[in-house]
Image 1 (cartoon, one colour):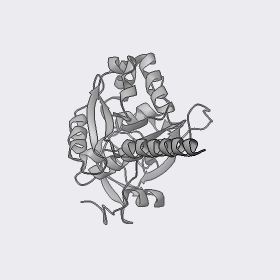
Image 2: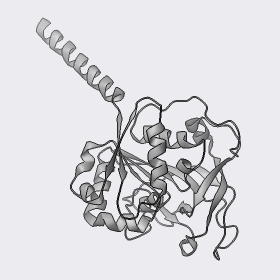
Image 3: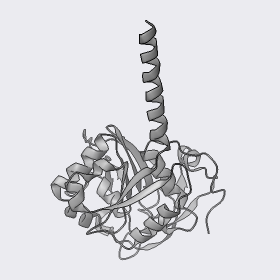
Image 4: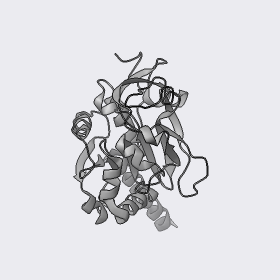
Amino acid sequence: MKRLLIATGLLAFALHSFAADDVARPIRVAVYQGPGAGPSRANLITVLGAAKGTPALQISHLSPAEIRQGKLKDFDVLIHPGGSGGGQGRALEAPGREEVREFVRNGGGFIGICAGAYLATDDYEWSLGLIEARAIDRKHWARGKGTVEVELSPAAKEFFGTGAAPIAIHYAQGPLLGRREWDNPLAPEYESLALYRTGIAEKGAPEGIMPGTSAIVRANFAQGRVFVFSPHPEMTDGLGFMLERAVTWVAKRDVPTKPKVATKQP
């Protein structure tokens, strides 16, 4: 009995130590690098490199070929940046897209920004199908670029530590996310964290379509987590922390609760 108690105690200590070490180690982040990745990727790398939170972020680059080769197993989080969602999805090819889905299905984290948000939907033949979402008004996807206002949900205000005022954020033709009109059993419904309150309607895009659509969403996908930004926090002064908190959440680490934004950004 004494030996059993000692063995049980050692096992409990080992499990506790493993869990503590796992929480303390850096979050291993892979940023997609390849066809379809736009210039905003540089901003993303800068913001991630400047992150001062705990745990630290360990940033690497991953090509479509490396994803197809199964190298996602060495990471906690995959980020697909702005650029071209179709370009990124096609570069991954069907085997690479399945590698990403399997990575998230088995507990990995996925973040999509703008083009990466298109990629996360289940709306295109090259999509990943990580969230049950469509891009509203696909015909006018190139509706323009500029600063827009988003309103956070109560849960998002708590998550990001913000005040009640809308947040001004850079927009560059990201998807206007909306619910699917039918169920996709393979893709989970998403939680809408922010709605567009103002919009951009250039290049023939109709007025009034953008406000009220989702700008930021998140979801669980099997054992993993998905976080999607239609606009660009990494290209907006003072909003890099939103991306850092998203990384922490999809990596299943503790997210700090200290307020970051009290009023609308200039």
